[in-house]
Image (tube, rainbow, N blue to C red; front, top):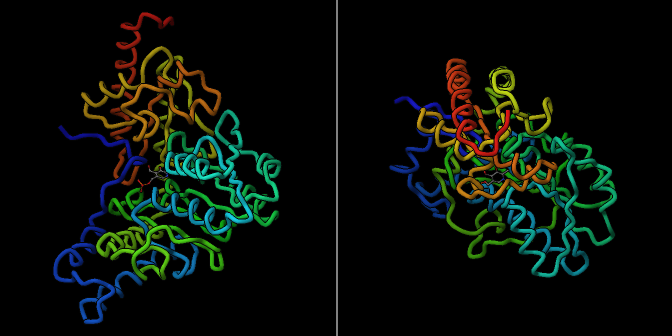
Length: 386
Ligand code: PLP
């Protein structure tokens, strides 16, 4: 059975061009970039080229990009690195309740270390009000962090206004842009960010490699110790094939961004409208327009999202409930609860996320299959009333 993959926010397949670029660095070009000989030099040059490519995608200087072991590490580095660098004078962090666990768990860790964390609220469609950021700022605030777009509901924040609120008070601003880099336009100067997290496997690159953009002059303490790699900011022999793959993925994203955004937005809207029109008691999560071009997050009243996912899987369709990290647990998504969604409705959430190889035909297949699945589950439900 040919499977329909609609979970591109969880991860993407590696682009064939990316794989081909990586292969030599897994075979004959296996050198360590720190070695002085020709093989080492070739690896070092490949990492430098990838740094330029990644920087080019976000409008940064190559020297402002530090490669990491993924988006989670980039988030950890941004928070802990900035917090520790300024801990003698500042002990307050500001973020939101809808962040990825990579941010929320790091905040919890820093709270145990003595930092205070303020969580600004979001409105019913998942957006932060820049005024709430302004009101939370204090003389001891180290950093404000608000994700660019949410991985579960796709809401895109008014980031440049939020960043301006922080920066006009002289406070550093970080964003988790793991879901936006390669998917919508991201430019560090236009957004006005000081730090920005990225991950290669969300843009058709390999897993286990990401980067943190750190604006020149930002004071940050290294978190991984042991060598002088990445200008002393992140020790350890570089993941050369992964970094090369990230670079090529960034180049492809830059080349294809606008037409792909247009194509995905069309398919997204077809799927949203098709579901809302054919299945009653359904609602869209997140902002209807200010949302990622590939995100469709729907609540189905009276059914468990998990049950829909199992039946979709049996029909050859891969989707997700909330985020990949929270699926498998029956608790409601912290993101949907933060929007004010009742817990029983939040449990009926299914997320479809589209990508480069999603076709119109696949969307029509989902629209044919889904109403029957929801109807069958509602028939079995002791609580559902039409
Ligand atoms: N931040 C967001 C918004 C994400 O969606 C993810 C991955 O799902 C991460 C961070 C973590 O990235 P990685 O899987 O590269 O560790």
